[in-house]
Image (cartoon, rainbow, N blue to C red):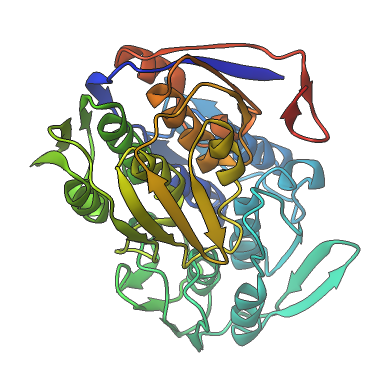
Length: 429
């Protein structure tokens, strides 16, 4: 196993280019199997989740050719399997998007119940409800979700809870259903719009993405397409918060500022200065940070994926701040690790109380999931002394060249083999 060694108390400074969106990429790649023609995806991030998705596609029989670091050509003409590999699927939750795409192409799919970060209960009942409404029969046997449909038929589907995953799967399946499907109370994230644009480029008819009602007129004929993945708003937000927390000045480039409005507003509220240009945003530390309340919501609200980095930022603000996590029950796994570094945080249900202003100190800590790992790195950058962050495989799932980008901003961070890492406990001995 590997770990990061980070020396703190160095303000980040400079410019950083943001990679393609992880959350878009892991939906676009399964969508590519809906055509037998060649698809070209550009601006793909080089992260573990994308590599795992590529392995799943190759295992299914998709021919893949790389063109440079971030461009991929996929030809699913020889695709014949309807069951992705269990060993690969268990590594990431987004693999369940193959339910929708394989069902759309073949009228059947067999997908293992997926793995992913432990963020509390994340049921897939809304996915199954939607597939049933479109005419699919569902059986769950031996850890496998088996779907089949002689014909998918358009329907009106209302999601009981706003779910990005269910919205994606319904869009994939409905794109191949006969007639019109109307999806209500759907997710409005930019990644949903990105998927809709890709499906439309392949010949689908998807309208309303980005609102809470999406209308889809199904087609049986999907063609090849070329599509560029949107910038990763979560990666951009992570660097923006790191700039404010470390007292530095960072410009995130190749971003869509509209996607970052909630983050921009919160950083300004806490005391940072934010300058917004058409494709870049600069965050400057200009005065002592002030405490604030932070509440996570589906887009366009403050994203749950940036709640852990947001918590670190608030530990630097002298006074009492309150975080309310409204999306995932289990999104406070990083709190105990931050306490090791001296953070004063108390969790009560979905609420975290942060008594900020006390300097953090370097300590051995372990990432418990992707975004907690990013938060711990930011904490280490603000802390006195040296920190060791283990279980970095979580971080590699979603951040492209994270330590290289941080080094380019002046951070002291490097990766080394961690012989003391205990795989069962996830802690450093």
